[in-house]
Length: 160
Image (cartoon, rainbow, N blue to C red; front, side, top):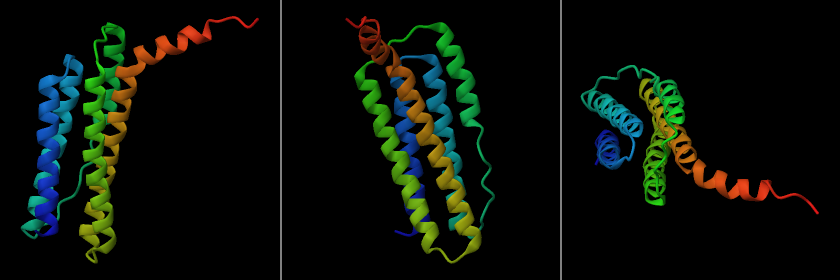
Protein backbone atom coordinates (compact mmCIF):
# COMPACT_ATOMS: atom_id res chain seq x y z
CA UNK A 1 0.00 0.00 0.00
CA UNK A 2 1.42 3.39 -0.94
CA UNK A 3 1.46 6.48 1.26
CA UNK A 4 -1.63 8.04 -0.29
CA UNK A 5 -3.72 4.87 0.04
CA UNK A 6 -2.69 4.45 3.67
CA UNK A 7 -3.44 8.12 4.42
CA UNK A 8 -6.83 7.83 2.72
CA UNK A 9 -7.61 4.78 4.85
CA UNK A 10 -6.58 6.68 8.02
CA UNK A 11 -8.90 9.53 7.09
CA UNK A 12 -11.77 7.14 6.35
CA UNK A 13 -11.18 5.47 9.72
CA UNK A 14 -11.34 8.88 11.40
CA UNK A 15 -14.53 9.83 9.56
CA UNK A 16 -16.24 6.55 10.50
CA UNK A 17 -15.20 6.99 14.13
CA UNK A 18 -16.59 10.53 14.33
CA UNK A 19 -19.83 9.51 12.62
CA UNK A 20 -20.28 6.79 15.27
CA UNK A 21 -19.49 9.29 18.03
CA UNK A 22 -22.06 11.72 16.65
CA UNK A 23 -24.68 8.95 16.75
CA UNK A 24 -24.00 8.22 20.43
CA UNK A 25 -23.19 11.70 21.71
CA UNK A 26 -25.52 12.65 24.57
CA UNK A 27 -25.68 16.31 23.59
CA UNK A 28 -26.62 18.22 20.42
CA UNK A 29 -23.52 20.39 20.71
CA UNK A 30 -21.22 17.39 20.76
CA UNK A 31 -23.09 15.86 17.86
CA UNK A 32 -22.34 19.02 15.89
CA UNK A 33 -18.64 18.96 16.84
CA UNK A 34 -18.26 15.30 15.88
CA UNK A 35 -19.93 15.95 12.54
CA UNK A 36 -17.52 18.84 11.97
CA UNK A 37 -14.59 16.55 12.76
CA UNK A 38 -15.96 13.90 10.37
CA UNK A 39 -16.18 16.52 7.61
CA UNK A 40 -12.59 17.57 8.31
CA UNK A 41 -11.51 13.95 7.78
CA UNK A 42 -13.42 13.87 4.49
CA UNK A 43 -11.56 17.00 3.33
CA UNK A 44 -8.25 15.34 4.18
CA UNK A 45 -9.29 12.19 2.34
CA UNK A 46 -9.85 14.16 -0.86
CA UNK A 47 -6.54 15.98 -0.46
CA UNK A 48 -4.78 12.62 -0.43
CA UNK A 49 -6.89 11.38 -3.31
CA UNK A 50 -5.72 14.36 -5.37
CA UNK A 51 -2.15 13.71 -4.26
CA UNK A 52 -2.48 10.13 -5.51
CA UNK A 53 -3.67 11.49 -8.86
CA UNK A 54 -0.53 13.62 -9.07
CA UNK A 55 -1.99 16.89 -7.87
CA UNK A 56 -0.96 18.62 -4.68
CA UNK A 57 -3.64 20.88 -3.25
CA UNK A 58 -3.33 23.67 -0.76
CA UNK A 59 -4.45 22.69 2.74
CA UNK A 60 -6.91 25.24 4.04
CA UNK A 61 -6.61 25.66 7.82
CA UNK A 62 -9.90 24.94 9.51
CA UNK A 63 -11.66 27.22 11.95
CA UNK A 64 -12.96 24.25 13.92
CA UNK A 65 -11.31 25.36 17.17
CA UNK A 66 -12.97 28.77 17.02
CA UNK A 67 -16.36 27.25 16.15
CA UNK A 68 -16.04 24.67 18.92
CA UNK A 69 -15.08 27.35 21.44
CA UNK A 70 -18.26 29.27 20.66
CA UNK A 71 -20.28 26.08 20.97
CA UNK A 72 -18.67 25.23 24.33
CA UNK A 73 -19.76 28.62 25.65
CA UNK A 74 -23.36 27.81 24.72
CA UNK A 75 -23.11 24.34 26.24
CA UNK A 76 -21.72 25.76 29.47
CA UNK A 77 -24.66 28.15 29.68
CA UNK A 78 -27.11 25.24 29.32
CA UNK A 79 -25.62 23.58 32.40
CA UNK A 80 -27.06 20.22 31.42
CA UNK A 81 -24.26 17.72 31.67
CA UNK A 82 -25.05 14.06 31.35
CA UNK A 83 -21.83 12.38 30.33
CA UNK A 84 -20.54 9.07 31.56
CA UNK A 85 -17.13 7.48 31.73
CA UNK A 86 -17.98 5.51 28.60
CA UNK A 87 -18.14 8.74 26.63
CA UNK A 88 -14.80 9.92 27.98
CA UNK A 89 -13.25 6.59 27.02
CA UNK A 90 -14.57 6.94 23.47
CA UNK A 91 -13.14 10.44 23.21
CA UNK A 92 -9.75 9.15 24.36
CA UNK A 93 -9.97 6.49 21.63
CA UNK A 94 -10.64 9.27 19.13
CA UNK A 95 -7.50 11.02 20.37
CA UNK A 96 -5.53 7.86 19.62
CA UNK A 97 -6.81 7.93 16.03
CA UNK A 98 -5.78 11.57 15.67
CA UNK A 99 -2.35 10.96 17.19
CA UNK A 100 -1.78 7.97 14.91
CA UNK A 101 -2.58 10.13 11.87
CA UNK A 102 -0.47 13.05 13.05
CA UNK A 103 2.54 10.82 13.72
CA UNK A 104 2.21 9.11 10.34
CA UNK A 105 2.06 12.43 8.48
CA UNK A 106 5.04 13.84 10.37
CA UNK A 107 7.14 10.73 9.72
CA UNK A 108 6.13 10.63 6.07
CA UNK A 109 6.92 14.33 5.65
CA UNK A 110 10.39 13.72 7.06
CA UNK A 111 11.17 11.12 4.42
CA UNK A 112 9.48 12.89 1.48
CA UNK A 113 11.86 14.69 -0.85
CA UNK A 114 9.04 16.53 -2.68
CA UNK A 115 8.72 19.95 -1.03
CA UNK A 116 5.05 20.41 -2.00
CA UNK A 117 4.05 17.03 -0.58
CA UNK A 118 6.13 17.65 2.53
CA UNK A 119 4.39 20.99 3.11
CA UNK A 120 0.97 19.43 2.60
CA UNK A 121 1.74 16.56 4.99
CA UNK A 122 2.99 18.95 7.66
CA UNK A 123 -0.13 21.09 7.34
CA UNK A 124 -2.42 18.08 7.60
CA UNK A 125 -0.42 16.85 10.61
CA UNK A 126 -1.05 20.24 12.19
CA UNK A 127 -4.78 19.90 11.52
CA UNK A 128 -4.76 16.48 13.19
CA UNK A 129 -3.00 18.07 16.15
CA UNK A 130 -5.84 20.61 16.38
CA UNK A 131 -8.34 17.75 16.40
CA UNK A 132 -6.41 16.07 19.23
CA UNK A 133 -6.44 19.35 21.17
CA UNK A 134 -10.18 19.78 20.58
CA UNK A 135 -10.82 16.27 21.86
CA UNK A 136 -8.78 17.09 24.97
CA UNK A 137 -11.01 20.11 25.56
CA UNK A 138 -14.11 17.95 25.09
CA UNK A 139 -12.76 15.48 27.65
CA UNK A 140 -12.07 18.33 30.07
CA UNK A 141 -15.52 19.77 29.47
CA UNK A 142 -17.49 16.56 29.94
CA UNK A 143 -15.50 15.36 32.95
CA UNK A 144 -15.44 18.71 34.75
CA UNK A 145 -18.58 18.11 36.84
CA UNK A 146 -17.13 14.92 38.31
CA UNK A 147 -13.72 16.49 38.94
CA UNK A 148 -15.23 19.64 40.38
CA UNK A 149 -17.31 17.68 42.86
CA UNK A 150 -14.30 15.67 43.98
CA UNK A 151 -12.15 18.75 44.33
CA UNK A 152 -14.89 20.84 45.91
CA UNK A 153 -15.28 18.43 48.79
CA UNK A 154 -11.67 18.82 49.80
CA UNK A 155 -11.31 22.51 49.06
CA UNK A 156 -14.11 23.37 51.47
CA UNK A 157 -12.51 21.74 54.49
CA UNK A 158 -11.12 24.14 57.05
CA UNK A 159 -7.71 23.57 58.52
CA UNK A 160 -7.65 22.71 62.22
